[in-house]
Every structure is written in C-alpha cells, then in structure tokens.
Length: 250
Image (cartoon, rainbow, N blue to C red; front, side):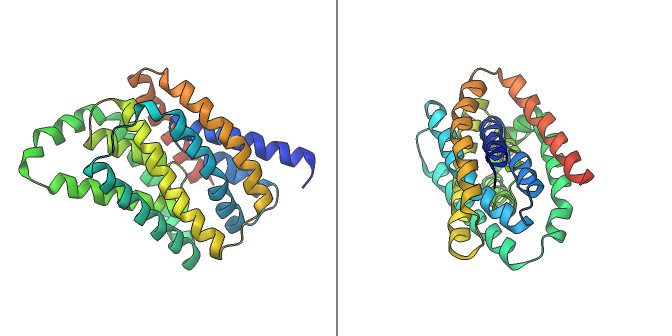
C-alpha cells in the first residue's frame, strides 16, 4: 500500500464515519474503495466492518446528549441488535453472498419508502398500540432482522434502523438517530469480534478506515444535531434511494 492509497482509505473512512452518524450507509464509500485497491470482497467486507466500529463509537459519544436513559425497552432492542449482528456475521462466513445481496437493494428501497411515510405510519401504530404486545414483538423482530443484514454487509443498516425507530417509537428524530447509532455500534462490534477470531482481516486497511471514521463520527454528530427533523427525514429517504440504485446498478 502506497501513501496515496493510504490517504484515500483515510478519506473514505472520514466520509463514511460522517455519513454513518447522520444517516447510515457509509460502507457504500469504504467498501468500494477497498475493492478498487484490489482487496477481495470478503477481506474488504470484514476489514471495513472492523474499521468502522471506532467511528460508530465516536458518533455515539458525539450524540450522547440525545441518548435516552437505558430502560427495559432499550435493553431489549440492544439484545436483539447484538444477537442479529452475530447471526449476520455467521451467515457471511458460512454462506455465499449472492442470494442475500440480491434482496438488499429492495430492502433499502422499502426502508426509504417507510421513512417518507413515517409520520403517517407512526400515528397508525400509536392508534393501535393498545391492542397488546403485538407491535412490540414486531418491532423487536424487525430490529433483529435488520441487525442480521448489518452483521452480514451493513450498507444502509442505519437507514433501516432509524426508520424502524421513528415508526415504532415516534418522537424526537434526533433521539431516534442517537439510539440508531448505539444499535449500529453493537451490531458492528459483535460482528467485528467474530471476524477478528476467524476471518481474514487486513489490519492496515481497518486501521486507516478507523482513523478517518473517528473524526467523521464527531463531524457527523455536529452536522446532524443542527438539522431540522424534516430535513433529516428526507435526507434518510434520499440516501436510501441512492444507495439502493447504486447496489442495483452494481
């Protein structure tokens, strides 16, 4: 790896860390960058996941004022996210990627559509919340399934997470974004631990991404906190559509 490549990977990590804290989908910058420099898809994926963990932690710290106090609901979501992240990482190492990646663009497009309709869906869910635990179980299951995707590949997992949070826990979108960052951290961290143990990590690439992503996490928290909720919502929608179209185009 030469100096130009190293600087390019750091810059990609900076952009990814910023975007991940604001919305998600930063892997769509770092992952293709590693592929461009000749890393195999598996090495690029696991090294990217490992490298972005410090950046996600940086984003969590930068957004700490918006985090709610941990309660039973928060812990349940954290457990579901951790379990799903581990499941996704196991799937990545055990199965070929072609089948799962085939549905990823459509999941992201669905998430973007849900985010656009979030105010209406939130009212719909709230009006029927008294029917019992059904909505909570659906919410937890959806977080778990999203975390499986996050542990497997993770591009735009933030779009999916913030969409689910804003629908099932309506309120301050900045709060939802802060919780999204914590869940994304858990998903990536548990996957990274497994990858360290059994997967081929390129430590140089992971370290360079981490350097950029740590700074990006702070920049993203600064920028996202100053966005109006409506602007943040539509930024999620636009990013989700762009990411999905990018994946469909290959």
